[in-house]
Length: 271
Image 1: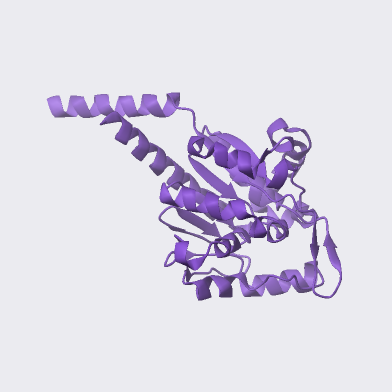
Image 2: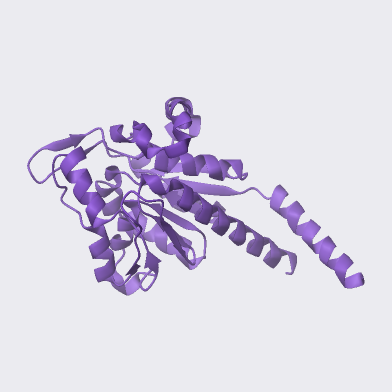
């Protein structure tokens, strides 16, 4: 009986700590607005994919987390025009207007941190998310800060969420110091890239075939059906395939956040 009472007290203390502790996630966002294509044309109004960003943000906020936004040079993110299409939202299409208003008026979104500022505050974050969209292939992929941020979160076992095109950022880390070699990973598929290039952008970008590059680097690539709801988790890394995968991604990412938070609080409790 006494051991049960002690267990109940311990659980209550953990619960209290979880509620009292300030929890924060950082969203690393592209600030690019256009994408140069191999045919000499430019794909305009690219950037962050709205459903991939907002639906993850909403779920994380509802779980009680504060959210910071960080972009290269603290420039406000643009939203990919294609991502306003209802087909990418599934049963959540009623949230498009809400997400649009958020982008227009939310103070944190419209005054993002720079990536350097995010690094300065990195120990305050429980997790990070990088939404997809073609924009990140323009700026984040080449930003020296991304490698540092990804490695730091991985070394501390903090949940890392990379959506659709965002797993390509793993490629920015040199192989000899890449913590994700051997991890199971997902991303936009070659077939989905083909569709985007031929029916949305009308041209091929410079950097493509993300799945093939990840496999070549030494990651174990797993994929779902085209336009399917698919995401995978391997330890602290959660990756998803496309805008249709928001539900699968959010489920796995919230589980990882909760597990990390509980482990952290239990560790503090027994110090």
